[in-house]
Image (cartoon, rainbow, N blue to C red; front, side):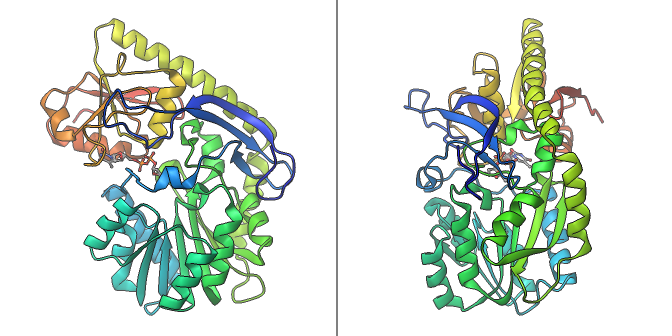
Length: 405
Ligand code: DWN
């Protein structure tokens, strides 16, 4: 396939087979469902890592079941992100901030008292309703040059555009950058937070590969994209959330701040780590994890043990479907998102139940498919009185955590 950043030839690094859209949970086990190829490629010319096949954004996001969880870990991240943006002069108390992919508005709600004005943009009508009901002004639309023009009419040139874990979710990455350039004021900042490709590759996080994640950005690929639109990376901020994320701060080239030494520092580390060998190890480790984890679960089940998953996560669907695990192996999935409860995970057909329901008859093991919230979830399970269940952590290699109080 062709690289969707620089149009060079891209080459395959990992084929995970066919998988249904990760958040397409079914209302009934009999509902029709489709699976599509999950093949990841890389471009040697610009460092881009992309899905070979993109699904329609409309089909993926118009009625979206993922609501940002109300999590301590995320709240701590919001605090650190606000501190970082404010102390570096990217955000001020009078800033006009637009968040793209604002979901239920949790981040904007946190930001609102610290800036001039906030506005959310999200394509999922059902999610926008929740955001508006919580007092966050939200436009229900995709972020593209047309909607950017309408937003500029409404709030004027924007000081900061934030795109957290949604920028990689579009087949054409140029559209969002074009939209940002047209909405930003002359010295405005475009703050893009994504799962960081270096963490994905180095930590064997192959479960981060699903149809919503159409790109896996590195410093190199992000700079290649920004450069094509007269923008440049001026700073970056690494975080451990979502299995390792990176916050890119971009500005129009030639205006405002010069790139910080941080960018050179981490680009040099990336150049050493994100190598062809690293991609090959990533692919072979995905198959090694599949074999180890499948063997572990089969062994536990043959010993009469019960295994549930914890977290009806997008990455959990990739893991379950790549391993071929179904409701025959894992009868239930626990998740605290009301819109997911009572539904069935696509293709594995595992029923989603609430944390309260699970607490009444806990399993011997939880396969932690929300492993990025490991400490918070284990603490919650123990505090609710369950000292029985043990936790299978699938990444970076399968291991069992008891963590009993
Ligand atoms: O990029 C994306 C990431 C940021 O979020 C989106 N495309 C989709 C989504 O991916 P995910 O589903 O893998 O994300 P999370 O945030 O790891 O999902 C956590 C799930 O776990 C949620 O469904 C909520 C659930 N949960 C829970 O049941 N109890 C989470 C916590 C913290 C809990 O205590």
